[in-house]
Amino acid sequence: MSRFRIAGVIPARLSSTRLSRKVLRTIAGRPMVEWVWRAAQSSGLMDPVVVATDAEEVAEVCRSRGIPAVMTSTACPSGSDRVYQVAQQIEADIYVNIQGDEPTLTADFFPPLLKLFERPEVEVSTLAVRCPPEEIANPNAVKVVTALDGRALYFSRATIPLDRDQAGIAAYRKHLGIYAYRKAALERFAALPAGWLERVERLEQLRLLENGIDIYVAPNAPHDTIGVDTEEDLARAEEMLRRLG
Image 1 (cartoon, rainbow, N blue to C red):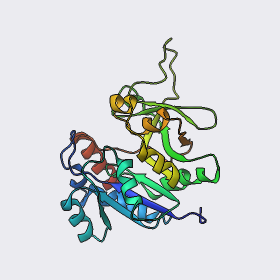
Image 2 (image 1 turned 180 degrees about the horizontal axis):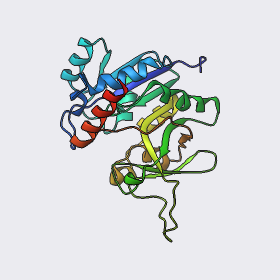
Image 3 (image 1 turned 90 degrees about the vertical axis):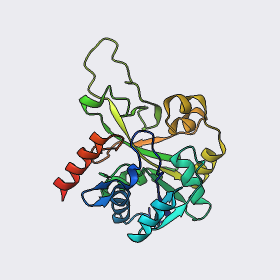
């Protein structure tokens, strides 16, 4: 990957409908967004790694901890739109959208995500893991179905594929909220309006699929993560991070 310049961007919106001010919530002594930045920075694959926010409070907390922050518009409808705004200020070949509510990410998530760009047909990549049984019916755990070559066919908060005959499918895959874009693909994304699939499922990646832009899913994410949407998630993430030291 050394022939590419890769920038990491962590969208960190302060307002949140499900868990207020979550990117600044403290987990094991650090703000959530700092855990995400540390994981991305320690991979050594991205330069720079910045937080993209629409709130001066978030930017101030980041800067006080040595984390570079870029201000973006409050009108961004998705994290990837926020990444696009950063791309107007920071030049790179590939931009990695690292969700600011994934504090249990570790450095080893980034190599499989970025290795996919060795394939010239890959414009956008993402990650998935085997879905834990207890999360298969959870709408906060987004499921993905792929073709044999790793190309995503669909993402949904619903349980897909439907096990019509109740045969006991064990291969449900949970999507993890991290993407990488070639610059041209990010520009195409930002130029498109949100379609009805994105609006109804509230999943930004469906804007790409709805407009014929392929997303490839890496087959070997190292482990599941805890995306924080609730107080329960926050407690689980803190327990995991304390256990990992």
